[in-house]
Length: 201
Length: 168
Image 1 (cartoon, rainbow over the protein chains, first blue to last red):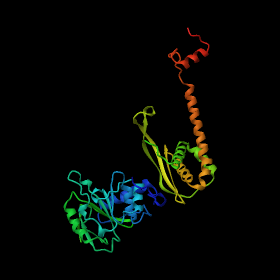
Image 2: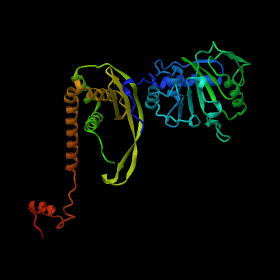
Image 3: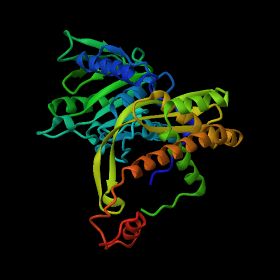
Image 4: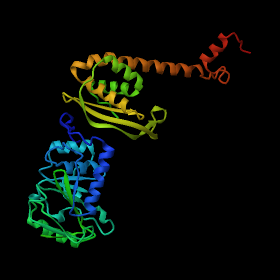
């Protein structure tokens, strides 16, 4: 049995569950439809540390009993586990490969992209969506994205992403239709990076 | 299932049941009688859902699914960190809110006695009365199988003969 949720310090979920999750869904849909463009996901102003508002809102909107959520070492703390257990009721697996959604709070120490569920030929949708929390979208090295949903090219500058990430992304992109999707989060903003896009550093 | 509730849990189960079975008006009145409005934050605002009602044939048979029922649930936290939960049948957000507030207050030392006296006791009494009225109404229409069971059931036979009929 899992230990009881510490409700005395639990952070509240959406203020207005229906409207807030709809707004969040719309923003995430836009993020993956228009890769590289910033979208605002700010319906959870007070998330449990170290989750960012955008990460917490994304999980509240999408995670439930059927979606295992993997947390990296930084996020795997009691306030976060309690938050997810209470509001989403989602399983919290130990292995990244078992997760439908994964949260990475320290990109430099993240598992390589191949460690996450890639989906299979019959069900490519069973691949994981991985959230990378970054410090900034404008202070890091420039990345140029090209592909469906992008008019010509678009540039963004995520801070703190490890060098291997871009090499792994090339492999991830080459494996299309398999491969993971990535959501970059920074505060209350997100940038979507579906497996269909090509990235150049 | 073996019942292994601690006395504290058993008490909480009892008051949560009483709160869930009361009507909104009853609770609203009792709450007004209590006369205070504690500060609280929502952990989970009242939301509707459905739950499967399960039962056992004759109370002892195998469990079966009776059907789904609409349910409202919510959770809130008082300023001192005590959390109150409510799961009530139907779609009354106010009912769930008041039940959760009472649940939270009943867990605190300082308000337990007051809430128990002003809210729970009258609710329980009203429910007991409803149950009694119900069984009285049911009893009034109870079919006496006297004629069919004539001579077989001792009590029926006595009742029959008491009414002045003679056995042929």
